[in-house]
Length: 255
Image 1 (cartoon, one colour):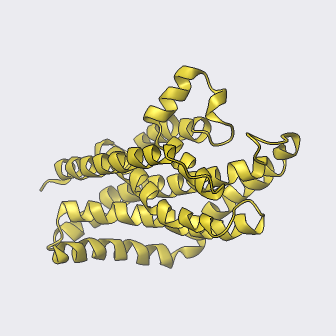
Image 2 (image 1 turned 120 degrees about the vertical axis):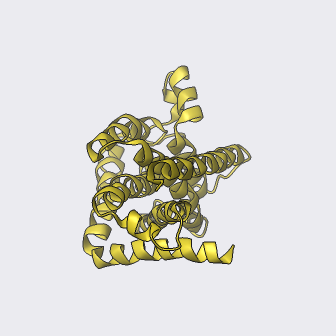
Image 3 (image 1 turned 90 degrees about the vertical axis):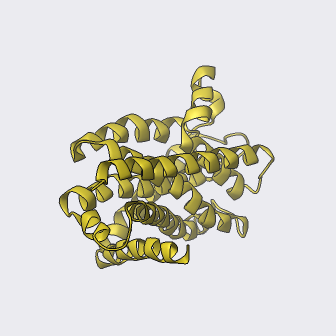
């Protein structure tokens, strides 16, 4: 068991070292994008919105921006980046030629995707505190929770990577899955404003909805029993998608 963990860790370490070699490209754009949303929507559009459920609008959207950053970093790492390593660079084939198994490679990839979510959540938190839209010390919980949320999106992403025939095909889950979540997961307005059918769909199907609910409860120091249901949904979905991703990848990369 310890040897398997070490081999998974070696895949994770390889991705980390590649990430650090191009840290300027990897750090700056994902950090700037949510900051621009906070400035434009929170402090721009937000001046026309008195409050949302008694919460100032910048405070309302801040945890959603962290959630979106975690989602994007984990999802795109385990779709486009993983596909490049698998198909074009043949990195997976090279690693599998060693004692590392296919399942360990994919597990390492997904854990690295989750780690990127933690990195970006950690970068954003000081900015949110500086703008006064996140409270301490409760908001520190955003960072460990980012790993679980990132692992969920990494597992989903790897499932798409396992079944996509070409890198261009990855545009479909990006536009048809990520974009709807970005808009309809309680990110920029409460779920209560949506039609009932859409609201139930968001709660039942869209993972980002549950991530936003928990992050918002953390930053507002309003964690309740309902958030346990959000956490349970995320935990079950993470286990299902990560297991499915490994099975699908084994089928694709069988040699």
